[in-house]
Length: 503
Image (cartoon, rainbow, N blue to C red; front, side):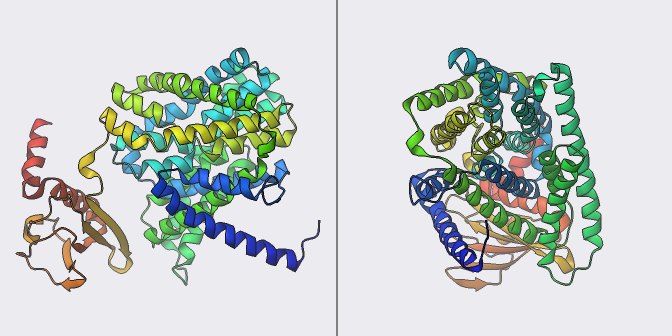
């Protein structure tokens, strides 16, 4: 079909309006306590064939665009993930992304066939599509919760890596090739694609970091584009050699995001903006695919029942088994079970059998769509409550100290902006009592809209904004010290010494 300039103008008009509406919806969803992805999905439904009449029925286009959006979302997840935070939990995260996925697929597939009466092929596809957690949901929701690093690290690693084996399984089952391979060959193929994707991602990330440190680009705005392209390049190389592109892009972005690169903070901000656009476009597109008039109570019942099995049986069992990798307290295991967030990813995966013309794929898409909406409404808004109920939240770090950073590239330093919240114990502490690492200094205090050049005896107050310059090598120690003082005030050093003696 021809695409002329008039259609392009109309596309830009509608696209800009929908994007602005979706961006403003983030504010509404935050106030209402709803996950923003549901708002995007509903916008798509309202714009679709049953609403304003925009018809998107080509599953192959949806499949291609969905995968493209997931690549950008995973790239942003890797670029903004701290290796230091996920390193202690990487073993558990990998176990959840592999063994946990296999357990979840098996349990949901058995329930789908014997309990729901679905054909084996559709039942296995249901188990596979719903076994992967959603990277966008995990990265955006969990990072706003004050959780221990081992929990967020495990969930982020799982979300970044579990798409890879799921995609391989769904492609093989949809094409019928899974029946030609035995279980051993199938596991070996999934393992090969995952390992090969990780190795390609490591090579692309390390090689890209080496190049970027030595490249003298004429404009700072080119660095974020180049870094994001390196991560996407890893995906392209991996899929070309039949390895896991999703594993490659996440690992490459993780390496690049933790390397000392020029304009690193600007790169992360750029990646976040691109990922938001990808999420908005992805969710709206998936909403366009749904035809609410075709939904029946039978489909809703199947979705709710499958979700019950997934949430209260498959996920807890997979977490329990994977928890054997390392000792996992039952409270943390219970939270990991509840925090298996599903978002657009399961819906995107159902476009694979839909594009392949698998019998029952339309019903599968509708079941997964309803399941995602219902259980995202159930689990997403209740995560803070569940974290407090299980005692895994850290209320002392609940935003009593807000901290942002900007790079000072010429002197290899960072400028930290700290806001002293109403519950911070930093109130009443003198500048000299902060005892920041040697080389870090408080340059300006902003109070009631006025700037103060602080002295050692300057007393800090609630609501103050501090600008702290710290050498990049000392940034982690500086942030740690500021958070300790914010939690314990003048006694921060004593608390730290007591903790070290007990350890």
